[in-house]
Length: 108
Image (cartoon, rainbow, N blue to C red):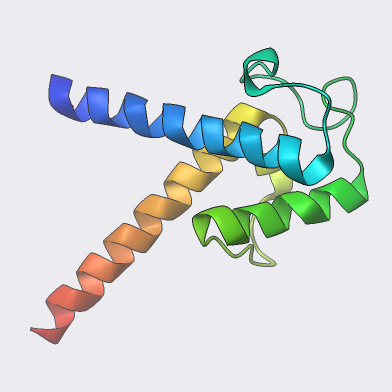
């Protein structure tokens, strides 16, 4: 990975983390701002203390903000922390981009 690619990846991760934190705050009426939520904050338990209803809101957030639909076979560990959620989003975005590029190449 060259420096430009690395910088782009870092910037993408920062944008995704910011969108996730902002989305969680708005959707779940959290009494925090994005800077108060550490990237490694657990979503459930001792962290943000989300529950199963909140998990549904996170799934809707992923769909509406990032266009990511959760499939039955997706490993639920992506909801461990803000960071794991960001990694999941970035991986899904790559899949969507790669899938679209592959589909376009196959049509030619």
